[in-house]
Amino acid sequence: MKNVVISGSGLFTPEETISNEELVASYNQYVDNFNTEHADAISAGAVDKLEHSSCEFIEKASGIKSRHVLYKKGILDPAIMQPVFERRSEEQMPEMVEMALSAAKEAMAQAGKTAADIDLIICAASNMQRPYPALSIELQHHLGAHGYAFDMNVACSSATFAVSNAVNAIRGGTARVVLVVNPEFASPQVNYRSRDSHFIFGDVCTATIIEAEDTCSSDNAWRIKGMRLKTEFSNNIRCDVGYTEHCLAPDPLVPFFKQQGRKVFKELLPIVADVILTEMAAQQVGPEQLKRLWLHQANINMNIFAAKKILGRDPLPEEAPLVLDSYANTASAGSVIAFHKYKQGLQSGDHAILCSFGAGYSVGCLVLQKC
Image 1 (cartoon, one colour):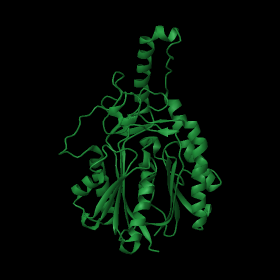
Image 2 (cartoon, helix red, strand yellow; image 1 turned 90 degrees about the vertical axis):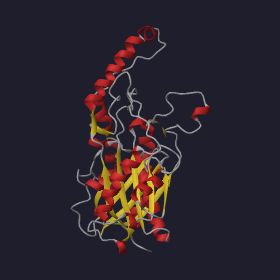
Image 3 (spheres, helix red, strand yellow; image 1 turned 135 degrees about the vertical axis):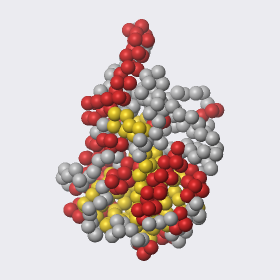
Image 4 (spheres, one colour; image 1 turned 45 degrees about the horizontal axis):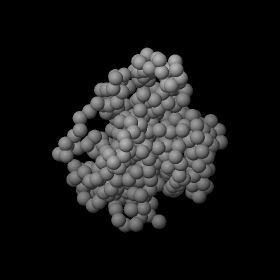
């Protein structure tokens, strides 16, 4: 079976940031305004009183301290509390394509590839700005690449599922070099009026180049030694917006991400551990051989729990690096950010895990080995 590698990675990070302190101050002002405006209804028991948020609550619940956003304007205004930006024309690149183009160029440079080398582009993300024409095909156009392209969505597991599709395309002979991009323009799906979720997401884009090992010229490539994907239906993480919404009675909460966090923690993590350990056993890789765990960056408590299950002990910070403190939850891009920023300094033959997990439920696990 043909060996396939990740030969390059790229990262686009928006310039604007929002700290927990800024977010909490905005949210608490909204709460005070709401409680004052609805004081009589709250006293009568017709409306629930809103409670303040705090930096301590956010960091304890998630490990998040800050996040990057494409559009900061409007988010911190208690009267608006959403990103403010203009609709782009059909002649302009949508934000997700613009993000992907930047990340793609870094990944291509790292892998030593040009647009002429790429014959498949997969745009994989938790949300798409439009259903068609595919964002990947527009990216293909702006890069000047040939071949074919398609979009796909498996929520927060989109990146690992896309890499697996890329591997299968190369082994099946329908592609030689694949560009996978994960543009996560997540801030518009956040309900900034919800204490439980107003802090969760940030914007970012990652990219990877996937190719056969015998065509790779990169000196920092990772062999994709094993892959395991699993899905299991759950309603505990949802986003319900779709093309039928204009036919239905409007619901202001429909476009927003929502989850039942405690149920997710309890139900999803055993699936994650089982998928990773099963694939490690299939590849005859023991926990003592793992040098890195690049895990989905949703919640520090979930990451520590998963790492302990895999290693059988508390992980060292360098073994399971976190980026969610400064990036927040970046959906499918999170584990790839960790890979991109913390793949240096390892030796040929070293093993690592790249794993994502999220809505679906979905889990994507890659067992990697340094070339």
